[in-house]
Image (cartoon, rainbow, N blue to C red):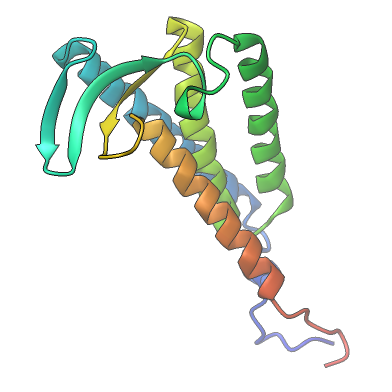
Length: 170
């Protein structure tokens, strides 16, 4: 019999399936809404190609991108749409299979960011980019959510690999 005082990740989140999905859905919804709201504000306040300094290292620079990161696959929506759909399904499967709370956080950020960019591709045929750092291509808030989600996903996987299995014989 195992010691009930041992708080394994499975024991901590047992019965927390509903809460995990609420975290996933809430973060996805907030990320999606915030991304689309900020993109709309940028489109309303800047002309295409216009640049406005926010901080010495950060500009608002209204641009569009019909490809994915760094303009890859530009003009190839027949590849982008299925790839994003498969990625979103993979994120949902990951959250369903990994019961740790960090999986729901990572998945929510990934789904919200991907959903924001996908929505824009469907409605406008391109993604609005507006954040510009020196020596880096222009990007948007959805990209920030996606990168943060991937980082948390990798952290969650690394923490899972480091976890010691609990033996039943203790």
